[in-house]
Image (cartoon, rainbow, N blue to C red; front, side, top):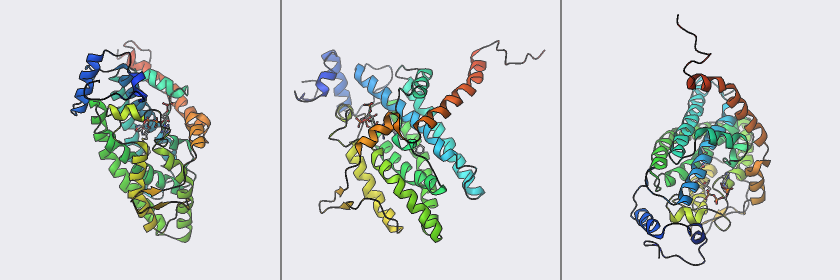
Length: 328
Ligand code: FAQ
């Protein structure tokens, strides 16, 4: 027994926490089961810290990399109002990365180390941002359905056990809800527009459906981290639960717009569960491990930004910097 939790000998998490002080672990798990928040200076198992750093860091990277496919559409968005709205959205996403990097820093990994792991390809970020946004409709589908998926995930994670992550997510979710409305409005405009607009949004939806199905992570049967993360209330829903929630909320809305989805097996069964063709997990693995259509380009842009911003960071860090012009 660890605290209130019975350890099943077949439970993979048993090995992960084997080296921890049983007393401290029991107290920690009791706190988690009481729904208390864990704060940066509290004792935590090494694996809890490691998992949180991994997850929050990947989330932060996803926000800054996620700004890239949409960002290229700012100058080409139809009309001044949409340009302004998209600019604000992209700025929000970068702000979310700042909040998340700060939350991850409370666990002891520096921002420099995180950025370095991103640009050297060591860290992962969301699969979806490794696909191109060919047309304006792709940017609209991202803003509607990727943000919708992100909200489902983040609303669940916000109730999780680590205080700084939960608080960052509460704020992020508020902003994401505006993005969702903006994305929905754009998709409705295209889906109820001219034949050419309808074809454009349908083609984008067809392109984005497989990455969207991957977005919630591998199926629970093959997910590596879900078991331990659910046990410690870092994840508050499994990958399959989140996928089901998304299908339940958005497939009817998509069909209502007269759009179709590229999965002939997609249907809600009598028990209320969505059935679908199993996503191609080999494609997913390839994309998250650097082999997607845009991975190289995305990291090249981040490396360029890192290089071009170096002088600013140096100037801020050096009191007698050569970049500061003396007043007298
Ligand atoms: N992409 O064992 P699991 C956004 C990896 S924010 C890439 O199931 P876990 C805002 C996973 O890391 C979007 N990799 O993993 C926005 C693991 O690899 P590892 C980001 C993925 O952690 C909108 C392996 O697969 N949100 O979109 C993905 O228990 C529009 C095994 O997977 C977050 O990061 C994936 N989709 O569950 C911005 C939320 N899924 O480390 C701009 C926080 C899994 O063993 C525009 N993260 N992997 O080598 C989470 O909730 C979880 O990490 C999951 C994955 C649910 C994503």
